[in-house]
Amino acid sequence: MPSTQQAVLDRIEPVADGVVALTLRGSLAPWEPGAHIDVSLPNWLTRQYSLCGDPAERDHHRIAVRHERLSRGGSDYIHRYLRPGRTLDISLPRNNFPLVEAEDYLFLAGGIGITAILPMLRHVLANGSSAHLVYTGRARATMPFTDEIRSLCGDAATLIDRQRDPRPDLNALGATLKSGTAVYCCGPASMLAAAEAAFDPARLHTERFRPARKTFAPNTAFTVLCARSGRSVEVPADESLLDALTHAGHPVPSGCREGVCGSCAVRVLDGDPEHRDDIGGNQGEIYTCVSRSRSPHLVIDL
Ligand code: FES
Image (tube, rainbow, N blue to C red; front, side):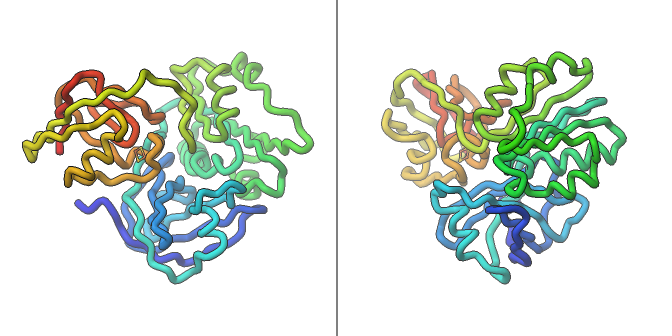
């Protein structure tokens, strides 16, 4: 099964100050709320964007992109140069932020983090669950999809304009949650840290755009055995597993190269991987862009 698909950029339109929504048309793979795609841009950069449309609409994907002040080239290219009619390679949808069944949901979205939350909100309300959204933005004009959110959930949405309103009190929200409430949070690092401090980790689900700050023991070299080819690859201390595999002729698809998107996953068959990603749930997989090995040898399914 191919890991990429093609889509034509049908529309690109402003949806808030500094934010454009892109409609990508094609015969596209199915997806579920929380999923994202890698978009390969004509300037050779690959960027990840949450799907913010309706999974029932199979002939197009919708994503939204904020023009980042400190753009590393992705959002700047999209805002300044990308125009309708262009064919883009996009990955199959990948979901590191799946919805769990719950009778009640609290959604916390900061800024462009609303893109991951919006399809979840639509889905749970359509299925008869109760939900409350707290959506925070730098200023009201910079917050996309506010009209859609109001018509979707009315007073069940609290929109917070940080120019006028105080930060949401997550500790107070945490103290009043029902026992069956699942909490989903997508937004800047400060919001994720506040959510992690306020909510029981057993009920909190998060998605990061950028890796959390962490420290690790110094890198050590290790050997990886690619089980299918039978080849051994040395991974020096100053090289990532992803790069070592690529240089040895075993390229692995990659996107963020920061341990947040999941595109570089390979299955681990033996050994003791040291997971350094921000995705979690590493059931038998390793994200080769950041993770390493505690054991001198690792066997992977490649
Ligand atoms: S490339 Fe994104 S997690 Fe490795």
